[in-house]
Image (cartoon, rainbow, N blue to C red):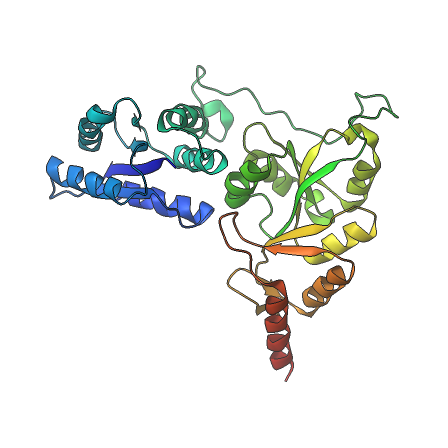
Length: 334
């Protein structure tokens, strides 16, 4: 595995590392070092050497630094000289760059430092956007992002693509829907070509729909549809080549979807935000009595639960979570 060292003037690298690990979970072979105002080149070089020595393997190392030509860059460059055949440096550190580096490493264990260095440049540049979009310099302005619709009108009705059945690569309950952990963790893990938010309420909210479209990573289209539209899509053979990641706000919508004929065998339970009357079943799942009863009903239908916030997390025990939630709800009633 490639070892990654973030390096900066001041606390910038520390902050970027903390943000990245909020999205991916705790990372091994991942270090962040900073040059403090009262320190010099030897200090930051010593920190880099210590970080590299802590890695499981230092054959492949990628430095991500803040400024080309700055002290962190210069010291990384000095270390690179003896390993120029394998090590690499990328400057201009930003969060999209670090996210892409961790994604590349996670999805391809054989990736080299130089391959990752090449892969992070475009996402780093694409992460620079303005709103309104016309504030972008003309030479750098990205093509206007067209509103995507989930339909197959351009394909004659009755056409069967693939085996005629849409593929659900992942179905997830997450009250935040499409956000950083989904975009940088679950999408690279399962490689959907579409993310579909299934929600009657969100489908009526143009602002949230727009935010969901904009949150999708490059190469993946995001849509928000009401349940009845999702049922139509599930039955339409023109979506036979589609690999979809489904997002639900709550277990009740999942139950409605399954009862309507959407074939889901396993649900990834990611996060359920607190609402008035809920109890905290764990640090990311808040439930009320309807939620607990719904999960039990899903169990009776044979649905399996994968309780994880991010792919790197260990799977939590859903039965234990539901027992704790029920106990807290019983206490609440007294």
